[in-house]
Image (tube, rainbow, N blue to C red):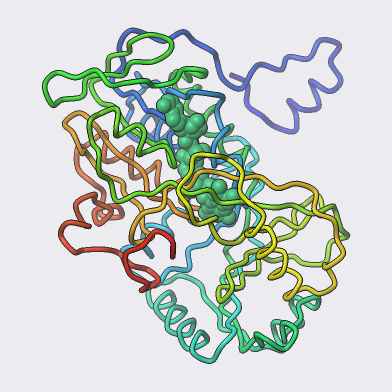
Amino acid sequence: MAEYSVFSLLRNAFSASPDWKPAWRKPDPKPEYDVVIVGGGGHGLSTAYYLAKEHGITNVAVVERGWLGQGNIGRNTTMIRSNYLLPKNQHFYEHSMKLWENLSHELNYNVMFSQRGCLNLANSPGQLDDFARRGNAMRHVGIDAELMTPLEIKSLVPALDLNFGGRFPVYGGLMQRRAGTARHDAVAWGYARGADRRGVDMLENCEVTGFLRDGDRIIGVQTTRGEIRAKKVAVAVAGHTGQLMKMAGVDRLPIESHVLQAFVSEGLKPFMDTVVTFGAGHLYVTQSDKGGMVFGGDIDGYNTYAQRGNLPIVEDVMSELAAMFPGLSRVRLLRSWGGIMDMSMDGSPIITAGPLPGMYLNTGWCYGGFKATPASGWCFAWTIARDEPHPYNAAYTLDRFHRGLVIDEKGQGSTPRLH
Ligand SMILES: Cc1cc2nc3c(=O)[nH]c(=O)nc-3n(C[C@H](O)[C@H](O)[C@H](O)COP(=O)(O)OP(=O)(O)OC[C@H]3O[C@@H](n4cnc5c(N)ncnc54)[C@H](O)[C@@H]3O)c2cc1C
């Protein structure tokens, strides 16, 4: 497949019969693969790519019930950061950040990774103390972090009302300058193309409806395009993990499915070149390259598989945005949508072998799986290829909830509603 470059762009632009090839093939399923990955979202696709690239395992199929990237990978607000407190999360997310920094080059696909920074606002003295602790913990392991004063914040984001209408004054903030955003669809397409180039089959419109078993062992999948056998079956279906695991006879998981909404406004002139978050109320906002304000808040708070939410959260999120940026209160909302989140009980993910022999599980991403896409696939591929976790994902086990080894980044206790 052709390399993308300025020269190929020019050649095709001026050619009478341009030579644009599809970015990936549309093969028919083979009867058997070494690895079948269920779920053509960001994590399934990056897993396929790293299996082929890092481990030379290319007899792989990604099985997706719709089209590649139809799920959360194409629905998120695209924020990327590695500003974590707990060492078990720090190393994993910083590994992801380093993969992001070279991703466009590595994939030969522009994922538009923009390190515009992520500023977490502190709206109480206690929250500022907490951010100072987190920033110190980050710097201690070599991750960039900067504590900002209200004056510095005002000069960075002049449109922000530092008083939040008098109710939530800003006491300072924690900035990670290497954080930012990326073009989410391009991430899915870039990984798909990269995996396809190495021989991985992308099987779209191919829904998994059951698992093939030999006793306890999983030996393949039943799909709407026939049975496919596999030496290893890896599941990366985000909010649909419960449904898939039920098909395999695993009834209880530390995961709940919730809808998370996101919003984009009409386009505005550029006025904010960083990501800003208001943790005390829960709102995160950035301005897209097209000028629209892209933002979101809390999950709707009830279990569902519907990819749209309800009005109370819309009202909640809009009022928070208007409190932060009063100048935006009359801006029109262009679109809103939802995605099904795989909320874990401690807010941290699961990347592990099991829960049945021959099966591997990747889930529990809560609000933060987009930024994890490179490291998630990298670690999951390692786990599948070597049948043992990499140190970066060694703590992301399924049985940590039985053993009391939860990774509770926010210190909020075991409930999906809070993460
Ligand atoms: C509104 C919203 C905003 C978000 N904002 C951010 C953010 O700013 N930063 C961040 O880091 N994260 C964010 N996230 C979270 C992030 O998008 C997800 O955690 C991450 O994308 C999940 O992994 P994935 O990409 O593999 O999931 P998905 O893209 O959902 O992939 C799962 C795939 O599995 C497929 N599937 C399901 N069932 C079957 C089946 N039976 N057979 C075959 N295929 C099946 C689905 O069709 C889907 O394509 C956000 C999520 C949402 C919804």
